[in-house]
Image: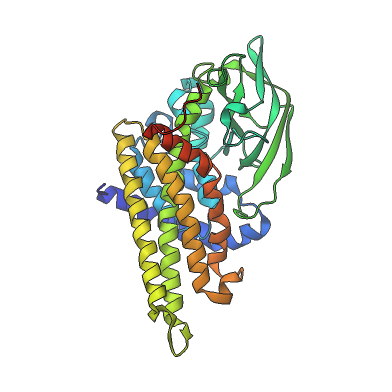
Length: 384
């Protein structure tokens, strides 16, 4: 994929924003366990960053996903994974189905302020006992006149304590598990919504993550996204953007980790010479950089398929799988070369070590990605 001057200009704009509006505050947000989502998203909305691939009719730029790719890679310059993840929820996890399948009225009410940064969005899929197994969710929405009455709960909800609305996946029928679900826009200030607790996480410390309960929450049926019973399909489509987002954001993050350890090991002396001069070190870093570039090529190829209207499930699943595993490999290897300092929280690599572990879990665990890939290869056991 060849980036144009327009792609590069967007990337530079994002990098400048990260350097001035995000990185100076990340350490503080990490300590507080939350970042000011409304404040930051409004600044990003004013720059147009939250609607790059969204329709111009609703305030977006109307550009193809290659520009989103440029944005994602530039967001990899953030000193930690929390903020890119939270932004990705807003742009490529909670709003793709709304942008593509939502009615004009629904998009005016929720997509427009999400793109502008006036609303913070979250995605409500995972539940205790139904994380990667999306078909097993138990939250349900029954019809009552022109409304839905929602009961149940969602777990591990990024942006959950600050969000204005949730893109909720709920059972709306009694049919087959892949055909009985719908996506519903749920305003989180609705009566019966309870933010049960903010979760205490290993990593992604600057991002608020919540457990949320619903008790007889009433929302109009016009808040349903697209057709009733199509929610599972819409969510699977959203997952492809989520997985590519996660892969793209981590490319530059890994580049920086390798470059920083090169600088550190070049200056660090051990046994009378630079640590970097040891073949085991500079060869290992060369291997890691090669793996990063191979992953970058896969991600770019997947994005080209998406732009061409092709099904990207196969490559997106591979990219998601490879990213999760390579992030862990890069973080672990780079931390090792810092020696004792690699175990100190004052060294940035420790944050990467904690944050990137989520990549192999969220948005579909590694094992789920392997199952998808095996199905495309025709090797997954037929359960009939």
